Length: 179
Image (tube, rainbow, N blue to C red):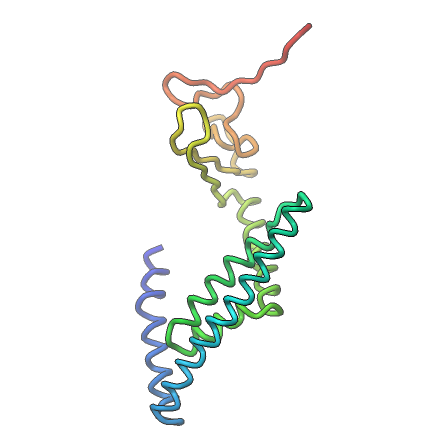
């Protein structure tokens, strides 16, 4: 994780500055400045229009009683792409436009969904919720299909294994009512 943060906060900005200076030397400082401003304004407008389109689709799917999973992923992508387009730089602009434009966004979404599905299958995806249960608090469920064992109380379909101890005074159990 530390390596990823180093790349995001030092290597990427350094490359962006390098590209800005190189391109500025070729086309001029004023032209480079105008490109950065233009991509920021164009990106904000595009992110707003695409975001509103996605919001309408989410509302339509929810009115039909459907879960808008794909639209939610696309909404996050448009938001992230808009942020990248507001960041000065050419690499971030390319990635930002890829996340905001519908055609490339759909391709990226298919790739992200495959990553999420692979993470669920491998047990690397963790779902967390807040305030579920009588006492409130923070609960975490991990689905881990390959690493189930007796000590892993959260490996049973994303929930504690029946008959397992949750904490010092709570056990998970199932019951069936007999007539």
